[in-house]
Length: 119
Length: 145
Image (cartoon, rainbow over all chains, first blue to last red; front, side, top):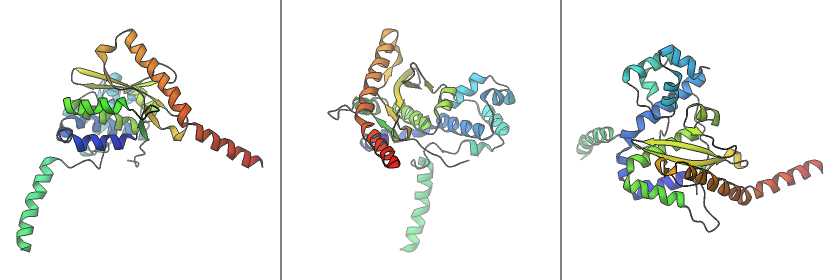
């Protein structure tokens, strides 16, 4: 069985899983982006660690998605990798995943007046 | 950033089509949605990493030459998901056994899990790489002919 099919089936059966996405996503999103930007720039974990003043295992922890680093550390990482903070936090893990609740609510609020105008 | 190339991942099913990994993940989604989501994210991470990168990041460990283990931490609970890279089907990743809490897997039980994964790996390769082997042989014969 393909993993996409299994996950789609589980998400359909258990909508509560979708609700917790925002709680557990950021470290995994950061992990992927740090790893990809670092590799693109030809840096080792040790070199990146030295650039921001942390140990190499700390970078390994961030890239495994286990660590939830401070904003100041994320900012240092972005600077060392030559990207913006927002680029480091773009959801490249699963870009097709559902939008955050705030965006849905905001779009819904925008939708209403348009509907009223149409009527 | 370059476009993402995601590797195919499938879960092991026995000859009868039973899939205990799927059952375990479904149970987990019901009992602990956060842990389920963390496992899902780690699998997504793994799909987008090369094995070298995954090993470097401690996302994966290799207890044997053929079996790798995806390491997932959700709060105080740890999960381990043994998998392997298929020698055919373009290096597809195959998850072999269902996740277990690490605390249950100390000593011999961890080894038993890896041994079970190895048996399943051999079974999967025997059943799924056969056609590709034949296709390769046919291609070689056609080249010679």
